[in-house]
Amino acid sequence: MASPESEQEMKDALEGLAMCMLKSAKVRDECGNDISLLAALAAAIEVQKYMFSALQVLAYASAYRPRMSDEQKKMQQLQAYAANSQVPPPNPLDDDDHVTKRCRKIVEAKVVSHIVKAAPRATHLSASLAVQIINSLSFDKKHRGMLAQQGAVRILAKLWEAAKQYADQKESISTQIPACNAVARILISTDPTVYFTGEARKEQILPTCAKMLQQLISHEPDDDGPRNWLPTFEALLALTNLASLEDMAFKEAIAKDSFVKIEDLLLSSNHNIRMRAMELLTNLSYTPTVLSMFSTDMRAKQRLDIVLALVTAAEKGTRLAALGSLCMMTEASETVSRAFIRNEKSKAMATRIIDPPVEDVELAEPVGEDEQYRLCYLIRTLANSAEVDMKRWVTEWASGPARNGEGTVAGRAAMLMLTTQNQEMRDILTQCLLKDVQLSEDEKAALVVKVKELGLGS
Image (cartoon, rainbow, N blue to C red; front, side, top):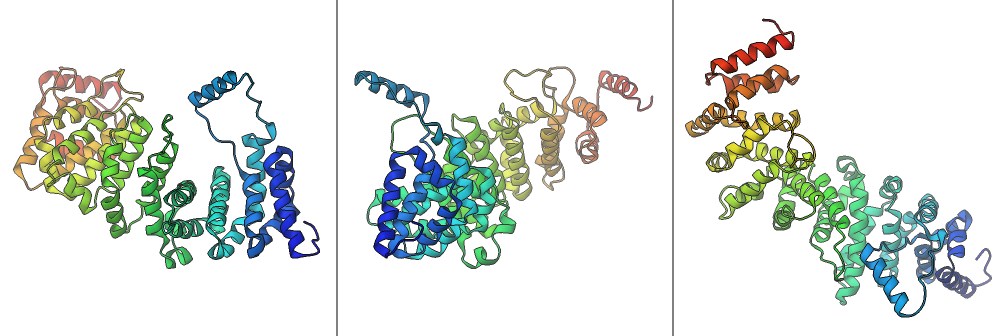
């Protein structure tokens, strides 16, 4: 490797090294930590004759052990028992810490920059190895910024596009999905308003990245084992990050292509997936597609029922996202506002937020002012509407019974107005909820007591 006398010797050396690394964890670890060797391999990637073997060596050095579920581990043990053998203990040189250290050295050797230069000439097999390497390098959060700087997202997008043209569907998917995984991880840790400028904007890779993430969200693994939700989770996070951009045409494209799958994931049995799907929907709530799906579409009521149910979900993040989405949609569309006030579940939902029980065993985290502020924002939209029905809904709800059966919603809102430090929320409660509602004598007396407790005067 150090000073080959001919091109053939160099090729033979690379192939021999790849074979040794395949068989030996010690060789993988030594080579993956050899800075001069990594520099030579990085340079070799750009030489067509050496590209595949150099990538193969780097792929072996950067590969993490496959993640096995508990069920898969048990199956492996049963197979070993049936064969009257033992499962060999894993080599410590292949544990995550050792592999991450090797990946760090590979990132610092700027291997990805060389892959970017060589990729246009890569065969299908070389492209697959390049994607595999970048995918491994992206596992550690500390590497992602450097990968983005070295052009990882751009080259992954190009290799993904090229793989769509492969005649062999399995070969195409085996390249595309790892590329999508890597892009998702990198974009989770990247500010899209900063990254998608300059060369990235010129090359128009933003729409391609969105399509890659959409493929990952929709991808169903072929194996029959338990579902690994992590790729879906990461894709939702990354797509939500992209959907934070101000480009409405881009957001609308995401909404058109992703809405059906997002809707499906809102009903997932995995609470983290539900929350991230709801957060993505929130970032898309101003788009024409989402507004129509919650207003004029034949299934609009069922969709609103789902979001109202998520407003009282166990996880705080889901509640905040669902309320945020309702705030945005009712503000943007009077049709959605009408659908909200006509929904038989809307008042009960609002009451549970403004007057939460002291202890609610159904909630992992109690309702707090973050949720109440979002509800107040929604109430302000309805109260300020020109439509009489929306103003009436606010008055009727405020005059209705509190959740605990003692007093009215307005009475609980008045208590909240006294205790909150959020001036905007205090103003909304005063101007939109309390001005047209008469409190009972008991509620007024309770307020006087509370004022004295807080030292606000008599």
